[in-house]
Length: 93
Image (cartoon, rainbow, N blue to C red; front, side):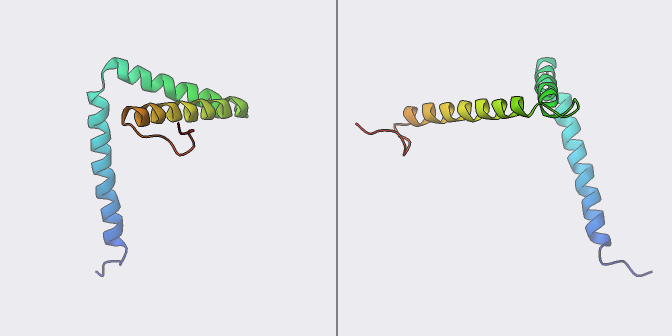
C-alpha cells in the first residue's frame, strides 16, 4: 500500500489536535470557580452584543470596542509614564 503524500500532514494535524485538546482540558480543570464564572460572563455579554440574538447589536459592539481601545490606551499611557517615556502624540514640556 502506498502512503498518500498528505497522510503525514493529516497525522500531524490529528496529533496536534490531541495535544491541543489535552492542554485545553488541563487549563480548564485548573480554573478556580471565580475565574470560570468571569470567563463565562464575559463570553455571554459578548454573545448578547454581537449577534447571539437575531441581528446583533452593532452599536453596542462598537461602543464595547471603543471602551476596550480606550482602556488599553490608558493602560499603555500609565505604563509609559511609569517607565519615564512619553507617547509620540503627547505634548512636550
